[in-house]
Length: 313
Image 1 (tube, rainbow, N blue to C red):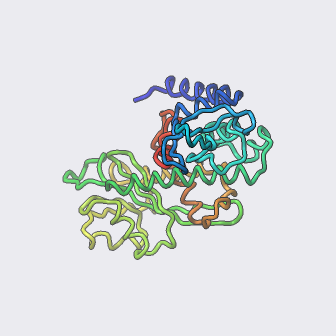
Image 2: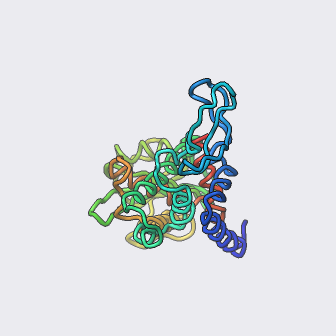
Image 3: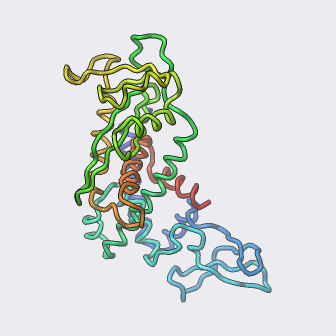
């Protein structure tokens, strides 16, 4: 378990490294290559041989380009080819700083605009893309395993799954109900934007994410009454007499709601930006909160590099 001192030190070093390296274009380019965010070689579209970085070219905005290794071809291409930078007109310094400093620090668009002179919609688009990329990886990982335990000991407070719903709102009036699932043993949370709070909507999601026969704790919402019929060991917490004690509680998922709403607070109001509908946008916001929660204490720069390399190998 990483100590608080190590965590703070790592975060301060992250700040320093990104802000320092993006003061220089060449330092930025070298760092992006070192993280495989720009590729050391790509395939030539003319002769299908390797194009190798990096030929200096002062006539190009990025000052470097790929050049085909075949002496008879010598075709060139932008060093952004095949990367998530490819369609952007920002400098690599600006884009890198926005993604790896401001986005990771959950800095609002308003604050970014004070620091970097770019269009507000550009910031929205970059933030939206990063959330979409992270959400894709979060959901891809979640389908590889299920949550929950079959609990034999009625008093075991460290096992079981807590399920609850919460209403997420955004500044422009959007609202969405979200179903949350929390596994006590591995302290993992998952969250899903849902159309409504009916049993026909909630129970299929639970069945897709929680193993058969697992113990599930919920409040008294009627949509959960059929869980026992689906083979779950369903326990109901009566919130009218408090939130429960010991194993008989949903306090953990309630805590997750507070954490997720705090993490998404600064990005409220910027749902639209990449063309997806608003519920998908809210799902992406929430998945970034889940991703941050899972990687608490880790180097988020390295974790985001991992995500981007999965999507842009």
